[in-house]
Length: 147
Image 1 (tube, one colour):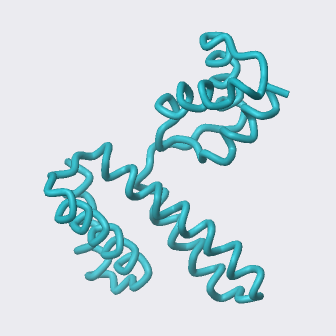
Image 2: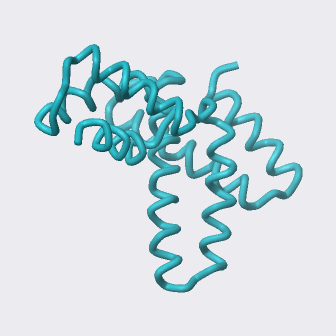
Image 3: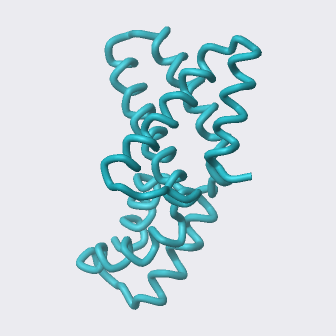
């Protein structure tokens, strides 16, 4: 079953269960996919859809920070629930130790030895961890290794 089909099936299920949060999250993702397809006149495959979902998760995490600053715990909890739903569609996330191991291997492959090589290392790592690790975490670990 493709990711689009899974989203549609889950949307129907959420509507039957009257799960408003899940329904709104899936609708939001489906509309983002449709908008991208219309804007770029392409048919998205699962890998591109995962990019859109990961982008949605990142936006929700950024929103949580802002809601926390504004002391809006109700919105923080809602955004966390939305992230949990979105995470069901993403592949299993890598732990910091796994990311650290990938970073170490990539630094050796690229031959990086200073912060000047940060761009080379990041461009080599990101395809390896695409959709499975947050870019902020990867960036932090790369900086630790290169300093």
